[in-house]
Image 1 (cartoon, helix red, strand yellow):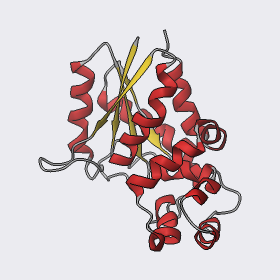
Image 2 (cartoon, helix red, strand yellow; image 1 turned 90 degrees about the vertical axis):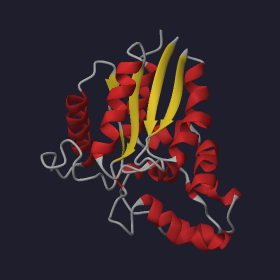
Image 3 (cartoon, rainbow, N blue to C red; image 1 turned 120 degrees about the vertical axis):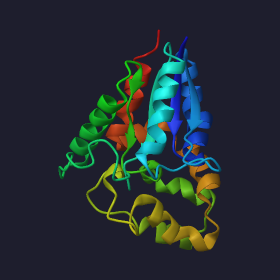
Image 4 (cartoon, rainbow, N blue to C red; image 1 turned 120 degrees about the horizontal axis):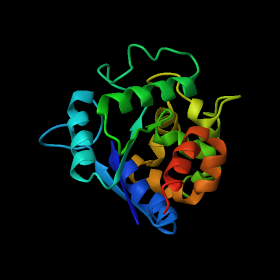
Length: 216
């Protein structure tokens, strides 16, 4: 049995790990435990400053040295104090995320740490199959949602800015129809399934392969 603590930045990611990823890995004797990162004494969730989350990651690595600790943190809007933010300045998003993950690994400096960043954020995975939104939203809403798909990009490459990142595109299309990120996001992800996500999102697929390789 292999334990994996997944340090997540929000409730949506916490539910995604618990309700979708957990079952996939349990059959391989790899048990995922989502842990919501704290950013203040009063609240949890969101990475506003790396200085707030680094001690939590290091502490988890040291407290359970027999387990693997990994992260599910958005590349989108990483804080300025994040390792590599000043040096990993390349245009290719996949090269950039690999550079940032290596910088994070070097900074945490724990042998049982496996860095991972979502490219560019969790909601990118939902663009793997937008048709799965149709169980929740009407035809007019679906037309607005499909109009948000950029041409010639993988879901992980969608990140035009603060108004056009994946989550912003979904909100722009569906906010008036009652879309709630923490409710609909994980449920639609379950309908999409890991196979479609892995086919469309190569970085996400590579992370899952790393976790699968831990199986005894």
